[in-house]
Image (tube, rainbow, N blue to C red; front, top):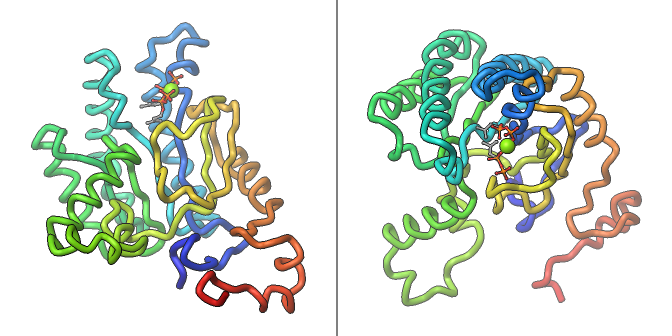
Length: 263
Ligand code: IPE
Ligand code: IPE
Ligand code: MG
């Protein structure tokens, strides 16, 4: 199975195998209702539950949710600690159900910044659900795409110090095997709710050939019908991975696909 969109051409299907979502707009959802931002975050947890179920029903195998970015520490301390508490409670409350439904949970990001109790909980939940294979739910917490590339580089060089003297030996697959989500294929479909059209330091390496979908819908309102709209948009795309449209439509032209080494 080809996992990298730049080293090969991944198999694609009508149903995206991996959906990655920036769950944005909780605060504005609440403010519009004259509620504290906190109410939007709480409602956002309900939306997570629904979307996890909807992904299972649709046969999506990987769902990655951006819950807290490495830049979200810049928010007021009260909001940061509330988000941490919500995350912890959701993990505690949902683990049994996730496990029963065959969901493997992974947390990606620098969790060493979290309080020890939360770190322990993350490790427990990951270990408990490790062998499940219905859906892999990855929660990006204290995650940043630049942090990820940096930590991968550091770990690679720490494990293989001889490479520092021969940098040409470092290739894409070597480095990407140290990325936090090396266990998953690259996302097929990226969704950002809340109206902003930016990546906000999410999976910047892995989104190289991902189809991007932006919606004005605030995250607390994002439901199965909204997910279907995103999937319909995805189904209407032609994923060329650098090739021409003719190559995709005519298999005999496709057969002529070459890599630089062939020239
Ligand atoms: C996303 O909603 C949740 C997190 C970033 C944790 P926001 O809190 O960013 O909501 P808006 O963008 O202010 O509406
Ligand atoms: C991105 O949302 C991070 C998460 C959803 C966790 P933000 O609301 O933090 O993004 P910016 O600051 O508007 O780019
Ligand atoms: Mg936001």
